[in-house]
Length: 307
Ligand code: GFB
Image (cartoon, rainbow, N blue to C red):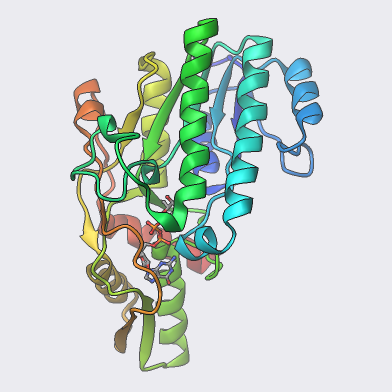
């Protein structure tokens, strides 16, 4: 991927896509293709076909997806499976048709079985039942992985797939109905502090364990793997460290300086009990996450205050 290669970052306005674009620009890449949703509707196959035929990108980062936290996944399952299958089918198929040199498909750690052995090795894929709150999203992502592998096998393409753990960072989604836990808690705790509230509701029991990766670290891993990785088998991207939701809430509370109480609401779903990725494959390839959670939370909080 030389500095003048044509690189299409699908989903460049999202948290992950914008982090990839930021990094590529910092690295001196001169030909990055960005299309807003208004300019290119990725669910419209004809529009995607015309785009690929006219732009002919050399490389594609497939970071466009319908994403959301546990509530959104559980409430809008049809949207999650349909939209993701459609956009990934369109982008992956048209990448094959025009002969893209290399495509990276971004999956998710929720592709693994709900009760996978921890930390979760890449080989756990398709070995057990999924977490029901996000099964439709997970199945779309699994289909994306198998689609890439099938094109590689049948047509000799180079479509690689990476599985990021739970993400957070700059340009995150702070809508409480659709966001993930970390941005949701930043917003709820900040608003409680400003309002002088005595307590903040944290969904679930606080006992689930999650691993959190800063989006700029993910972008760094993606660019690293785009340069170095050529295999069809998937690669986990994470920090190798997890934390309970209760401890995460406490850490965010301390960062924001909220003096009230955190109240857990077990009527809300916990989701999968633990989701820690085994990152030994990535480590052996030569990449490690850089941003500690405490620093990432303060950077994300600053970004929230500025947004
Ligand atoms: O981040 P989150 O929505 O996604 O929730 P998942 C993680 C945990 O935080 C769950 C708890 O146990 C939630 O109950 N939690 C506590 C909260 N307070 C809140 C809150 O205010 N908002 C949210 N959202 N959660 C998603 C999947 O699962 O992870 C997606 O649904 C995707 O498919 C994504 O894979 C990475 O980790 O449970």
